[in-house]
Amino acid sequence: MPGGFGSARDQSSCPCGGRSYGLCCGPLHRGQRRADTAEQLMRSRYSAFARREVDYLIATHPQPGLSESERRLALGQACRQTRWLGLTVLAVSGGGPRDLEGTVQFEARYRGGVLKETSLFARKGDCLTGPWLYVRSLE
Ligand SMILES: [Zn+2]
Image (cartoon, rainbow, N blue to C red; front, side, top):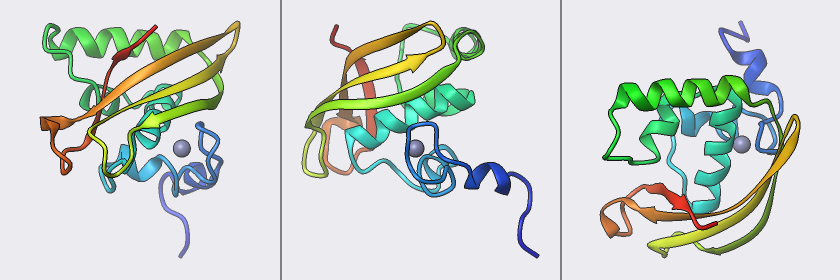
């Protein structure tokens, strides 16, 4: 039997603009696949905001100064308050399979406005086998 829980949502288009959620950001959110590039991580974080995947947002952005419960609360509120409508990646620098760092400039549309940001990403542990993490906004 085809289907199963979540399969209909998996076949709908990905919030980041990719094909289907189940082939795009879904496997990253479920921990089945890692982002190969900084751009993939950026897209998957945008989708995580759109789909309220708070665990994924916490796992991909270290904030040592804040407790997990504080972050969970803040991210939950942020996800509820903003309705994301679409993402456009404007420029990418570095952030490839052989890079330790990279930046992604993007425009994220939400109901009521547009967020324009250049994000800095780096690999965990500063080595090529480390997963990509969001470091901070450069603007
Ligand atoms: Zn996606």
